[in-house]
Amino acid sequence: MLRTVLATFFLISSLAAQPNLPPLRQQAEIQQEWLRLRLERHLPALMRKHNVQMWIVACREYAEDPAFFSLVSPTVFAARRTTVYVFFDKGEAGVERLALGGESNGGLYTVYRDPTSSGKEIYGDSQWTTLRKLVDERKPTSIAIDVSATHAFSDGLTAGLQEKLLATLGPAYKDRIKPAENLALEYQELRIPEMLPTYRDMMTIVHSLIARAFSSEVITPGKTTDQDVVWWLRQKVNDAGLGTWFQPSVEIQRKGLTAANRLNRREGTVIERGDVLHTDFGITAMRLNTDTQHMGYVLREGETDVPAGIKAALKNTNRLQDLTMERMKPGRTGNTVLADVLHAMKEEKLDGTIYSHPVGDHGHAAGPLIGLWDHQEGVPGRGDVPLLPGTWFSIELQATTPVAEWGGQKLEVALEEDMVLDEQGKASWVLRRQSEYHLIKTFSQLP
Image (cartoon, helix red, strand yellow):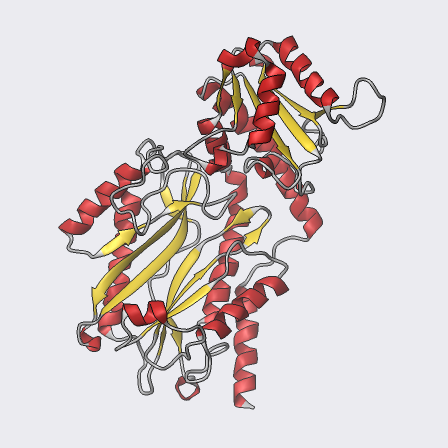
């Protein structure tokens, strides 16, 4: 009976602190306004920055360009047959947005119908004939297409459509065609400040769910498994009407359990008192994605706090977060930031790895990588692009610390928290970072 009462108390307390996103209809209205602002505020500036007068984005149903979902309304879930969007910079008159196939996206695009058959959707040969006519009328000095050997976000033009597009434009435009690599990349990468309140609410939900997952509401030492916690998180995300872009994970570290044991363990390990827990968890809502890693500790009988050596391991990772964010300045490349942080780590005698990345329209989003967990020497290409003001990052990293209470056995504390690099280049957390472990108490330890 006591267990039921306490669990109910925890549930009510947690829910009180957890915001709800607006109803779907209101979400769509908010997202539509975000789309309008991005198309009007960011797209013209980026086309001019990268000397692109015309950008053509062509894709088919079930083979959508990665940029597609950053260019369409929240009520558009797929390309319509073959959808071709044409963006043409008219200078002071602004950027034309033309849809050859697909819809107007709430009036944000001018839709072309079949000129030879009134009322029919543009399709087949007439679609490509109309595209050539539009290009001939506008005579762009440059035409960008989504082809890239480096960035998936800029490589959405399939081989079949590229062949068709090049044949349509013909030799007359051959020398004007160029990859839209940085244009497509940066359009998807840049955030608008109007998105941040919603994203902060999403992060609050994430923190609340992790706090509940790493508590006595969910975990009974000696009974609950790591996979029980994973599926509790998945179920709560589903029940809240949210989505996720990856399967959550829960990992266990304990005295005597080596890294090799952890890598080769079977799923379903029972959580015991004295365990250090780690979760990697993200949600998806309103075409935004979060990415968070937190740590928990299961108190032993008689303990009221985390052992000092385990506490120190978390502080080392917090210090690594500081070193990383201090070096994230607009204009610096991901590889430059990585090299600088690794040098600072060595100076402070910290043992760790950095593998931070942009976040937003995608979980592992467009923009510069700051390391990969297995490539601390830098990431060619993807780490060579500069950080931009007005972007979001997941500060993902880990520090490894010998723990005296574990006989010198090393503890990996991996943290991940989302941050904003604002329009002035100032770095700050979207919500807050973890600086203390989530504590899992036994019922004899509860007040």
